[in-house]
Image (tube, rainbow over all chains, first blue to last red):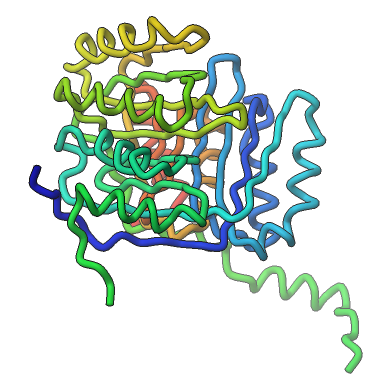
Length: 159
Length: 176
């Protein structure tokens, strides 16, 4: 199978994933936004998903240092509502896959997921829009993930 | 050096002279060329392997996925929203219903007539999703999903909310 040409794969390491589950829709995103603003957080990954029971799930990545600064405030948000679950995973990385025509080409998502699973990589999150796929994986599986992706995609590796 | 407190008059003058708060700048707001349909899948089991099988199944049936937000629960299952073109509603639904039939506990919800609105550049700045979600909420629009990938952040809204959403976002951000 001919490899698909893509732009160089881009990795960001040293991240922490924070996820909130079951946040009441009425609570809104504003409290989280306030914490991000207060601590100057840069969102390395962001996924917000409305659920059927009038709640939403939120998953984002930030740098380890920013997480340490904002941790107490984030935990306060979690404590504010009894039904909300919070999960933290350290040692996370993101991989950006930028390709032309992803939005009109079939099988790309299947290739990406298959490539990672084939190398035993666990996907922690995915945000795909227009021509970009941003994946979240454990940092210690980045090299496996890149190897898997390069079986199906040809990227001009950065020197 | 000790900073002395401004007098009341000085404080007022400073406030009057401060320029209006600048809106967050964006290069553009994009909407998709076509209406889409969304499939919200909850509790998809078997972690990454389960998701990979699902994506492969869709690809092998020539379905192009235009938008995905996917995240995994600590228990190993996952929740996701994926969007395809409106005209692919029936084949996509058939495939997904068939795929999920043997996966007890997983749930499928079809979101008819949706659109994706993309804001760029995102620059990892929380102001972009923060201000967008707040502004849309104020006009009664709840986003079905939001996903950021590189320099673009995309929001999924109901097709019927599209015009108001775009107008609201243009009023919220300074768009070049």
